[in-house]
Image (tube, rainbow, N blue to C red; front, side):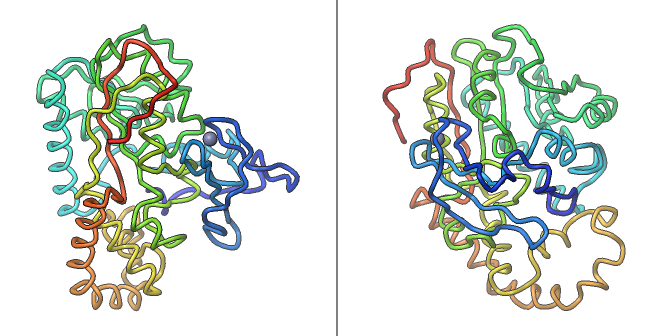
Length: 349
Ligand SMILES: [Zn+2]
């Protein structure tokens, strides 16, 4: 989630030309179905087109490589070190990383793990303490170098497809809320397959644009996060991508307590006319949101607080309901590497 940082720059987009048509970056089809129009604001607006074949959405105009590099440069998307949220939220995040470790260890014994888009390295820190040999990856070289110096484990950077790591280097690869940021998700999954040993585990989590909260929220949906999210997966689209690239899906999690209830809560507030994502921003570390934030946004924050007693239980109930319907706001898929890539049968659990 990068709403606080960076600027989108439609003028530098590769498809800013009105004659060019949005295309699916996975199958190459020209897209005509607009799922959500005018996401963003008057100076930075995108449409989301949907590929009915891949079941994945993509933003138009599509950002250029230069625009993406700018968006993710150090200090723009996230701080290299330090707390990102207030202390209570940070505790909850650490707990959720420990639970993620437990889920992985249902399918794999400690070995070599690569976390693509490792952020501040909290998850890899938990894994390392549990006996795993950890490696991180961050696109921006400065972010990666800062993180490696701070955490003491290797953090790779640069173009992922050009890293030239040996085949079958890892037992587990994780992509937690990363694939939606990537210009070529198919390439990243294929490269992950190459880097995994036979039978190795891939864990991918993304928002689900066809979730109940995604459909109800529309352009107000918290997890939409345009222009940072350039691809918008559905549950089916994510599974198809993995199975089409030689993975067997073992488990799909439709209830993620870290992301789904809050997705509802912030979406309900956004739909109620409170300034977009104000509650989320208020939970950030004061250095990131600005010292004068509470004074400037007093009215919106008071309205948010007044609505919380109603919206918090409602958000939890809605997150439970949508997960039972397999329409969770975010999904996490555990899949293992198959011996070969078959493009025929797709099995949706
Ligand atoms: Zn497609």
